[in-house]
Length: 448
Image 1 (cartoon, one colour):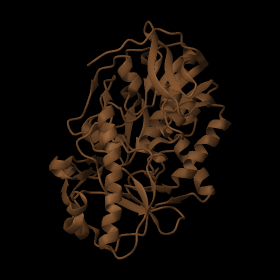
Image 2: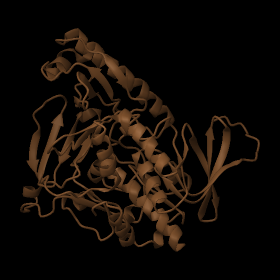
Image 3: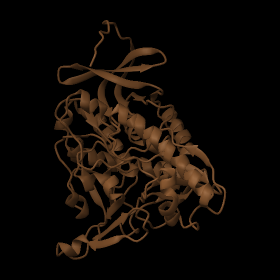
Image 4: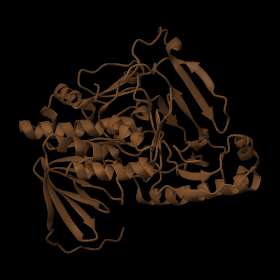
């Protein structure tokens, strides 16, 4: 690679805060709000022009249920519940009933507006259209992050830092050991389109005509938007063979995702029963899986399937273990706490079914939700740093459950609480007792 030398220069310090959160998805926003509510001055940095990440710029409008696996006992509260209540009161959210895949359908545009309002209410120092580029270390502590935006290049100094970038950009730069799953779950470009296709035999349409438009016999999902007539969310195609933590792959995924969206529109208009038109397309492709980083604990598949209870649990979840396949086996596999395993291949609506509990000689499930231990977020490279989000240290199927938004939301809350406790007690993150984090989350209404 040809190199050029950039002259050394002084970097202005734009801000100084107690906590700096890099990444403004709901994970990062919830981390920032939690820290602010515990009395800290918080700066929040986001590369895009809106908060919310995949839930807003990615247009993914589904959050999974806050109830246990039997849909009878609330097990998740905190900021996810608070935001849902705000959106419901405004008529921008519909509860989806008893479903393992969807608990609520929300309006992503109004969610972005709501997050703006909450950031203002909590006094967050917000930096939109601002890209993280590097960090400055002071021994084993991060001193500042280097950023770029319309004002040029500058820095934010803080006493504690939270990585909510998804890909773990700060984790990378402090030198944490990194790994990738053997099957990197492929991303999807989501869009909104007029006209439903439920009665149009979509599976047959794709099988008969998809190749004409460069489409695979690929699994996808869709559904109506809340309180909006004749506009449907669609995620009908994956983009295969990319790692979106790499710049060239991310570019290819974005371009190919848009092509596939409009190819789908063209196919349904050519062979469907009614006219269709894309009316909104994601500003950022929905990335499921990239880099992961080693921490004090790697979550296993059986930790979740067995509903293992950790004394330092910082989230509860009931979303099924969900792995999207690559191109050689297009489809996805779901594993449930009650033992069911369902594998869908291509557009076939009929799953291949088995039961992991029966195969292991186990009786009925005794627990109806799973947990994540705080130590799964804790690294030992930098004393004033924690991660939260889909870079979580977990086996493939465990990751397939933990990566979804409601679970990442809770990781963000835990990270914000951890930052506050570390600063209050003047201790490195690895010395923090996860049971104290759990207690503080409980005190904030997280139903843990």
